[in-house]
Length: 450
Image (tube, rainbow, N blue to C red; front, side, top):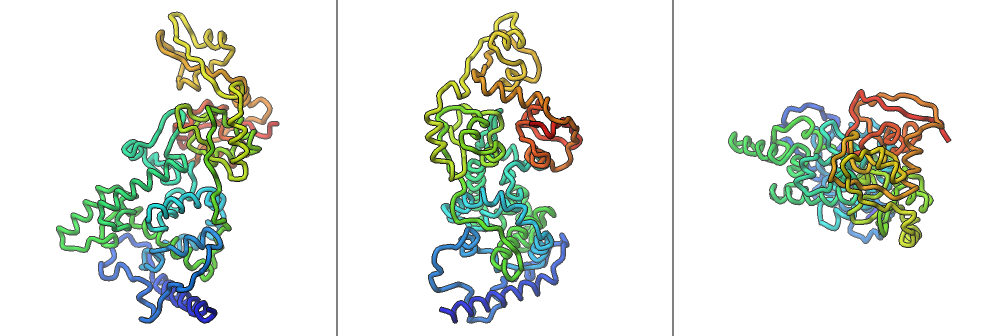
């Protein structure tokens, strides 16, 4: 057994040396590599009798990285572009430290879902490339979530997107739809995962046109031989580079965050619509922590007409499920439906129902005061809802300061930076959480309040 372990370690070292040697020749050039030099399987650099697989039963995985490492498929591939991608990550020594909290929350679920479908385990790491494992991430092209799903793609895939909920941000929904999409495209590309990943990044049609162009010119049609956008030419190598880093983390002196090989969250039934703040209080969680597990929930309360589920840390799941099942209607969001009459105004309706005009606008997605006779307004019958909104909108106990949105900012990142909640920012600025922050947009924040 000791001899086998020693041989395995020597083979890993030999393979790593080969990778590093090739990596020294890597460049960032976007010019296509020659087909015959485009890909050198690193395993081919080992002696003919070498076998990097461990033949003995290694026992259960020691952590989630070990579970992933045992299933890697791309880690032996190498060329100049992969070498450049590896250096991209290695030059960011705090990269894994920064993404660790997100990976601890979501990666186990991604790994389990990918395994269940028999897909390459590297697919579970694709959100590292797409969003740095941030479900609140939005791109300039309006892609969103862990998997950076575009609005049009979401509509084609049937992802739920409405005033209350955005499935692109939801951890479970987005993963299901992204993996469905990848599986479908993989069938279109005859099982070639590199072409599939390229299509996920730049679009299936673009990759198919590149293949057709190469066929017409008598050129190879593998991923490495295609003329593709610069971003796509870097995209696939970065995932392969991550595979190599996970495989050879110790030799590369990369410290991967400790992630248990166990689920971080469970889905519980809310037994009806409930305010996010109330659920967090009942669970003994900070509101921002509950939102970290439920980024798809866009409003003050869980979405009506949804699946009635909340994702919560495993440690509180059982007790919170029992508490929510017993929660009386007086502590929930219940609704009245009011048909607007001729002569009505939002001010009059708000006064009649002892609520606020701002709240009526919020829950009915109204931009102004215009209402029409015959339409129906939803009126939340919840004292706690009204109190939480009033508190968020007042900002009366903090020091007021302005903030100008910068490129790449998100509500989540701004909230973390100034130690406030996403709900605070939305309430103070009367934002629509379903819309995107724009660079140059002015926000008002109240800091240091009680």
